[in-house]
Image (cartoon, rainbow, N blue to C red; front, side, top):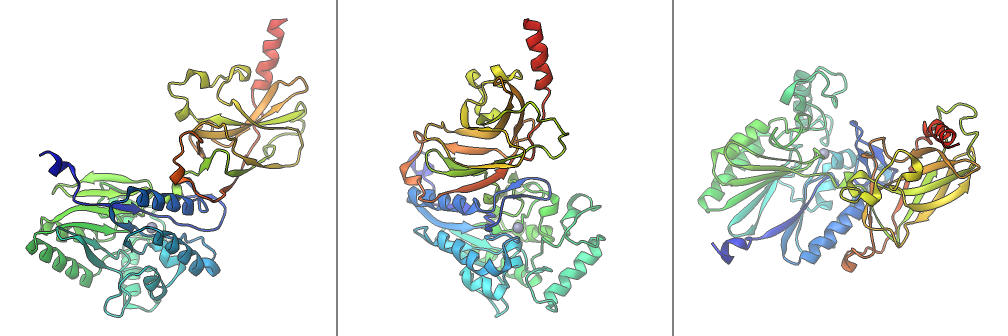
Length: 444
Ligand code: ZN
């Protein structure tokens, strides 16, 4: 006990699913926001934090460096740009390939770019390294057997297509529809570990056992149903795990690909951690520095004259519920005049039927917190008669963070301007209109 056990043997940095693309924000199939342009800023911040730590042995990128939606004429330049960001880490960086990498570039281009040692002249992407004499890190190639990334007539493509045909009756092989439980993993965006790689893994683990080393196994695709969705699992996770369980040296399995993150300890005590996607980290805007583009318009389903009372539109920055906890002075109130959740005025403009936009530099005084943006339609007397907001009714989606000046580490300052675009899908015509009238009559 004492200082000997409290000091880690070594530390390392990890990041997963950066999935950068120079395209507007979007959503996953399940509706989770994806911030394609922001993800490179997330990576830059990670690299700065790693360098600031000062004592990391290495950094490992868990795959999917660029997104499949990246325009194909930019695949190469975008991948290079991301690799260059990783290179700013003052130490060794290890990469692995994910399905999104393979949507962009063939293996023969990817492997040299990502410094992945190719074996057997066939662009296999599995390898291992030893950060310290006591430890070994294994990087698996989860798209060894895959319908993505190999030439169309390659035996591995054919083997993958055969598996998909047998296991997935959908004509769209990226869909797990109708598949139950872990059978949902038989989709085209997952893959498997081939026979030869399994033998190699067995050999590495045997060698590690003999050398009294412990092992960290990394792979883009998760290896345990306990830490990820069934639809994001390695096709033959069971085979891989039985090789791992044959030896007692693997302590942890790390993965990406599932995006939401998960943690599980299996029956043999192996820790499984699938990492959250950098792509899905909401933008952090820096007070006094970042410029945000805000667009608002009347809800498309609004009827003629719904906006008849609108004289002015007031756009405000509002605290999300998470930033209101234990702060009664930020409380939301349904009666808008008593609502304290939106104290920061962004702009007040005469109402116009056509969509309006504005570039707003996040105010220097904005406190650190999580926010959304709301636009109020006010009438000729200055009463708020309607509002629309950039988040859903529960104020849980499409939020963003602001890093206030006071809480900011100067060393984390990044000399770049974040240009976030989002629009109000609607300027809701709200019941408050009627409520307000009722209230005024009562007062008379
Ligand atoms: Zn992936």
